[in-house]
Image (cartoon, rainbow, N blue to C red):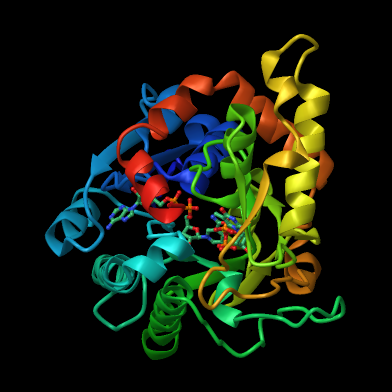
Length: 364
Ligand code: NAD
Ligand code: TYD
């Protein structure tokens, strides 16, 4: 913290979906009383357009760098007195991990090791303790816990053993273990959050919700994997941003907190809600009203190793920190669709080029 009490945050992956929402949330909440340095290498999922509204702020800096690049990351720590690390940067899409696992290990495991090492080197005192007030938050997923049965009383807890199935969740589980190892071995000041599926503005349309919104508006088929009855626990992204901030400010160091929406739905239910909400929100006379319909639903081959059900009981974060999901799904999905209506250009830009190639390969 500097003399004026301004904390400096190093956010990795801030140009992605959750990272950019987090940056907007933090500036809305703290204004000029924080500084944010956003480090992102800008993969297909990183988009500086997500941060247009903040890019001219004096207390915001973007650094294009790869988290696996030790020198680049060490340089940021050397040049800035970093108080908080919030580590989002990762390869995040399960389907891509099934096709190309290696980059997931590279970024999610090695990249996390580099972040931990650089933070440790910058924050460690000669006696092996750490400078006062420094904190690292590792943003992870509930997918590390594996898959739950179709039983509405079964939930993931912080004590649930890790049992990842996809290369994505295995790489995230490995990165969580590294953070745990740093905490256990060095008393490195960190927390881990394991969150359920997010949705909201700026989500890349390879993920279910934005993909369905985008396809339905264009009258394209809506691909449903398997029987469509896999369950995910959906959380509005701003609620996740708030949870991350609350864990860093109020959580006990070295603890893991599960973050979830209490909003379990089958994929097919999500698709039906999106179709109904689109019909409701599209103005009379809009030509898209004619093709937004269940006729677009197309059952396709199941994802390999497809986890059946995820569900979080966010009891610990509620009891210890007072965080609860605030945005009901009916409201969150309206906000999300309204955002996509207002940001058609964003969608056009991110779905041109490389994404087109990915989409054709994936759904051929
Ligand atoms: P995203 O794919 O939208 O964004 C990832 C960001 O990381 C991008 O901006 C990308 O450019 C950047 N990045 C990737 N590799 C990098 C590298 N080597 N160096 C620097 N930057 C790099 O992902 P997201 O959905 O915003 O997820 C963010 C984090 O939250 C991830 O760690 C993910 O595992 C976790 N998470 C996501 C969800 C979800 O539903 N999306 C749920 C729980 C946890
Ligand atoms: P996704 O958004 O990829 O998140 P995750 O796999 O990390 O949970 O997928 C959410 C659910 O939707 C998952 O059960 C897979 C399913 N799904 C489809 O049925 N069709 C699709 O085109 C996509 C992308 C996902």
